[in-house]
Length: 398
Image (tube, rainbow, N blue to C red):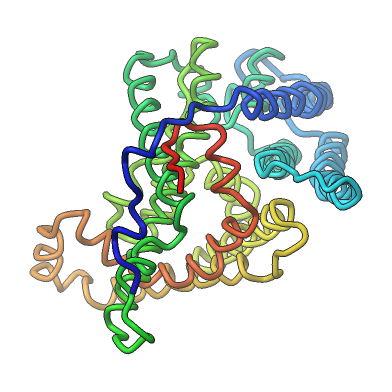
């Protein structure tokens, strides 16, 4: 066991490190280049392939040309990103120059976003009103999260101050967690684990605490990244969909977590391009949901390959999402069995339990799979170190 004093340094030797302008400049350069060259060109071409509206206020139809062009862009641009990373990795090995983790992260997000947006257009499942005019279309196509459409109309942006304050809070929390994880990636296990692993219960508890810390870090980091997209839509005067809706505190079921609260922009992608087409093809809800989880796993396989080209072991992300999908299906079966129409008393008891308690109980069984098959590959790719350059954080001299 390592003593706390060995982990927590002398605070007098600590100092605040400001964000690196160079790191932000690189990230913004990659993001803007993707948006203009990728989303701009692809979105414009796809808009021109849509059939003309039969009458004002009606919806344009995807033509065969739209289907072909959308599928072409979806496949080729998605495939181009790993090729770029391989070329960058080759350059890295020849020049001993490290690739900043944020570059492949942004490229992978760009690759799968273009894939799903183009496929959505090819299938004709884009939001009503997105094809009103070229300006509205480009706003929808290039935005993540997407602007909100209600009855075909864009919604005005909410007050900016609450969004700004929440972003400041998330930045501060991210900075605190980065300050901890830069020193020790598994702080609970390193500090309090039993000698020679002789206390299984203690070590398992500490492992779960570290995994929970990693889960919260990932949630806050991803939420922070999505807030940038929300701000970009807001400065144009429109509201964007809420990326995350308190999934780690308010979810009362796996279905609610994955379907309503966690990463809602990507949920829309999977719904439009996998779930709805599967339902139209005659598959029931369970199989359509499993298909969506499989595709989600494949998307994360793609992301992790791009993030960690040289060291990622294929199949881990896919396994994690298969487990998540199976748990959601089992949850539905158990719920029908225990809380059916004739179980009003049991339902009433469960409804009195606070949401954060139920949510915590739902998270616990998933944590080992999350840690081993999902988060660990981010650690190996150097995420913590590279993200810390973009955030204010505390650093201590040894």
